[in-house]
Image (cartoon, rainbow, N blue to C red; front, side, top):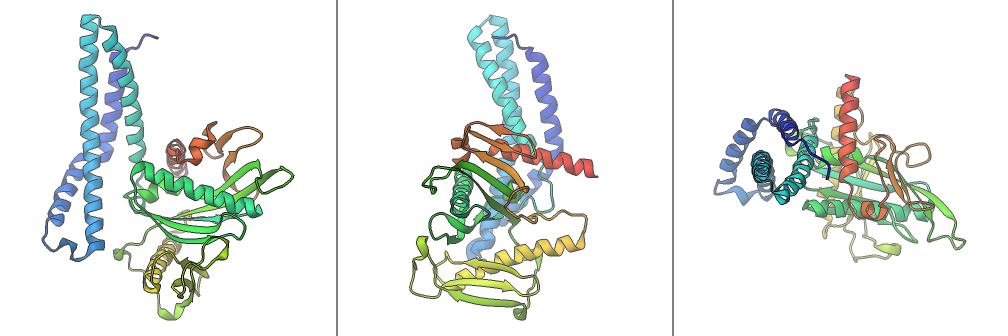
Length: 371
């Protein structure tokens, strides 16, 4: 095992931790926890379940932030003690354990450092993710379904609740489009770097000649609207259509017109919801997403220098931000950050944290360069 300069490594850990602690503003976190704890303790908290959920979720997130910071500080202290004892006693096992813990603490600090970069106006919000099949026919529809599974598995790995709001199935296989919520603080800031065109290259399972096929899918990520955003939409600006929910192959999954499609006439924005049981629930969910999209339009108009969060995603050649190559070799590569891995199965099973971290760092560097 190569000789490790533990004193220098521990000094580096402390320096990194100190910069993270300063940016995180521990005192502000403690103040938030005190305020949110008081709000969560009122007797009638759950009279408004939606508001209560936001308060308790925010409280849990801030408590986790504080615990993560204090735990890391303690781990660095414990590592220093372990190294001193191991060196004093010449204990090789202790030194080997210290080397493993050094690497683990360094990884935890790196992960925490990425979180501190989420400082955008809407980064703290929950996220609404929409995936649409692009060029590539049935392979593109199948790819859209693969991406949806990837993101849902990613959320599951982190314990983030998700709600599928709308699924439009393609005739032969896969999805034309799907929309789902990720209900966790900072979900938007985290997942917004996934927005863009994704490209898949593989031997098509739908081609009887076994030819290689390239297909595309678009990922859109928007922040979830909050009551304080005050996005009012006049009734005469919305067209409401109702229809029966459909499943794979176009089969009807109920006997009532419970699915809802809202069209915002001035902008042409269309939102469909069909996964709730009642028409009223679907309409409320669709309105929430429509308001979220209009919020972005409003903010972009107010500040022309802001880049569009969802962007103009064409899902075709020349626009891709990430490639998933399954044949003739195995590789997933982000074309913005140059981050790549060879284990395509793990990525498609939700192991995308390294891509997200690299994307957040890339975005921060580009913002700093632009300013």
